[in-house]
Amino acid sequence: MKRLLVEFGMGTSLRRGDYTQAAVRGVRDALWHNSINLAELFGFEKTDMQIIVDIGVQDPDAVDIAQIAEVFPYGNTTVRVHHGGLDVARPEGEGNPTIMANVALTVGFKMERADV
Image (cartoon, rainbow, N blue to C red):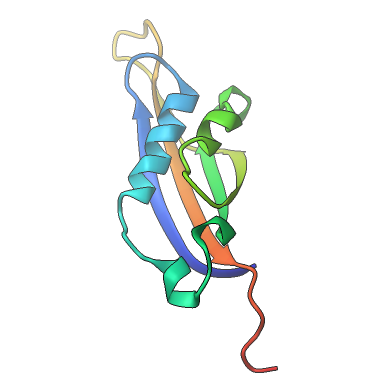
């Protein structure tokens, strides 16, 4: 895969303590930062896009990867969840923390080198 684009996003779950919700919001934040027509630019179909989703949260096992993949209407998606992000405790110390997820989307295509 030839990497052509990397976009970054951040998502939160303010009160529910939902790592998947925070991750989905981070993915949407990254997606809505651009409107680049990569597929058309290189003569590919949108379904040919290779999308790697890297998510950082404090509890990687709590993220439902299938829900993350459902955000993308096309392309071949690989979701990888890593330890990262941030949990912010409530001031009074009770209830769920605020969950912050960091997301990096890498988009590319399987391309032949032009200089061969």
